[in-house]
Amino acid sequence: MDFPARILPELLLWSATVLATLWLAGAVWRMPRERLTDNRFTHVLFGASVGVLSLWSLHAGVPPVFNFHLLGVTALTLMLGWQFASLAVALVLVGITLNGQAEWASFGVNFLVMGGIPIALTWRLLQLAQRRLPHNFFIYVYINAFLAAGLSILAATGIGAGLLWLTGTQTAAWLGHQYLPYFPLMFFSEAVLNGMVMTLMVALRPAWVCSFDDELYINGK
Image (cartoon, one colour):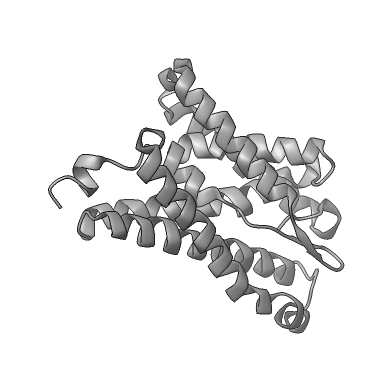
């Protein structure tokens, strides 16, 4: 969901902007910047960013303030790693803002809710799965792609609803009637989309997926 700046307190907007700036600074500091000199990687980075930009440009509205759209951030994170996925989400937000679909004042909130939360959840679940579950192709697809994507959009939309309730923008009754019923649909749509994308990526272009290793997940299984 995209947050129009007019519905949120100015203090929240500024605080989110600071946090988003710190997040991006940390991502840039920790990313393996030498990969940016590899044309093959930069083509994947910008191509994936354009794909997510197109996805975020397709949305449905719930009057008066909501814009729903799929995120695709789980696939972005699994392909690029959390650092470059953060950069890609920032580029996507710049694109939709320049296109008039979002506002600069709410950039930080939108980045944290639609980017930061899914990236953190996806990357953490990947780490847990690699440590505690068998290294198996189907576990990678169903846990790290399908389930992680579904949980990510539930977390993002749930926290978004919580922000609207805490700030008094909407009542709990209105959210329960107009917003929460869409959660199951968003869960399965996001999960299926990311699961399909990652299945195709690891099958046809495994070199484009930084979190996948044939030796770990396929060979000898």
